[in-house]
Image (tube, rainbow, N blue to C red; front, side):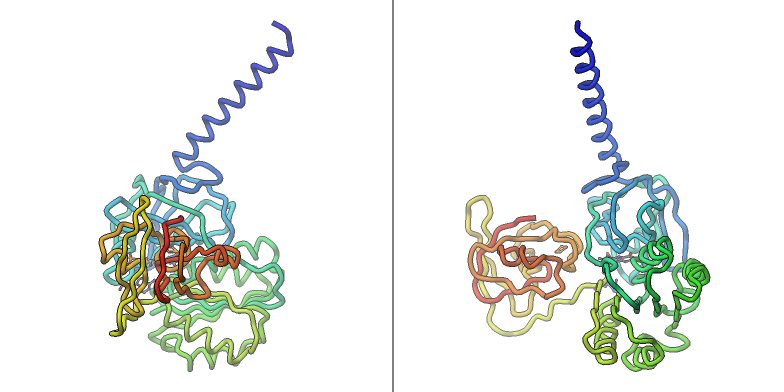
Length: 354
Ligand SMILES: Cc1cc2nc3c(=O)[nH]c(=O)nc-3n(C[C@H](O)[C@H](O)[C@H](O)COP(=O)(O)OP(=O)(O)OC[C@H]3O[C@@H](n4cnc5c(N)ncnc54)[C@H](O)[C@@H]3O)c2cc1C
Ligand code: FES
């Protein structure tokens, strides 16, 4: 056999082995870029009485501020959790228990090292913009997680711009990873200023309290906020009033409830397996909720307009979605919509297109 043929065979064998190993790694969660995977929990750390952080055996390419969808088992729904460390560090998710919450209660009370989790992602557009001269970050409760990832990334870049971070928690006991925030602040040489408020001392982050806090902040070029919806609404209104025209980036951690009204229902049509399947949507009802009420099993993930798992394509008519739903202008103009946050806007026909 000629040396050229031998070299060709050796190269072919190397390529086949590399492909097989990378597939195995992806299936075990060990791939550097993974879309759907199973991860094994390596450690669980109690951060506060209601919050845990956990590490996993995987690696993943993601950007600071992104999240994954997690499902502890097939009997529980998918939920979104942001990485609380920057890329390149051991993966860490930090979860705060929500009263009566299905997934957060499981993760904060029953999770142990060795448990397996189904994971999809990464997803998300809550990313540090390229050009910022001064940042104002506002976090409520578990909304600190993507900022921990941002701060670690900014720390690694020697703080390219100054940042004020306002963090609200229920009490000092409930402050999530405060020691880590203190360490970033200390190391930043004055570039990072953390303002901690707790409900039991200063009160919750109402418009009044935010107005007082923002009066002491130098005008930012960029405001980012993350947390439960009521806090986010307050923060956005106050920030825009105090700093007109400032760029605002939001990551909502809780979904807007359906605001179902009494008016006439609208009929929408789902195209499935070549058949037209009509169902009624109440005024103000999310299309996904209405489709479920009618017995259709459609894919979904975060159910907050953040991951794209419930994406559909319009065949006719329109479905109204909020501006912050994670679809690009080009996807919207091609007729894609997210039905977890979409509401009827007259008659429409669509098909699933995740
Ligand atoms: C992009 C994104 C990233 C997220 N990252 C994190 C994270 O890093 N850490 C984390 O702890 N959570 C995070 N969340 C919230 C998380 O996805 C779940 O919504 C939360 O854990 C509750 O899920 P559950 O199944 O326990 O509650 P459910 O069973 O869905 O809800 C129980 C009740 O609580 C209300 N509720 C749901 N979510 C919240 C909330 N966040 N605050 C207050 N009330 C709520 C519901 O309306 C319902 O009444 C993120 C959400 C999004 C959209
Ligand atoms: S389920 Fe995530 S965007 Fe609709």
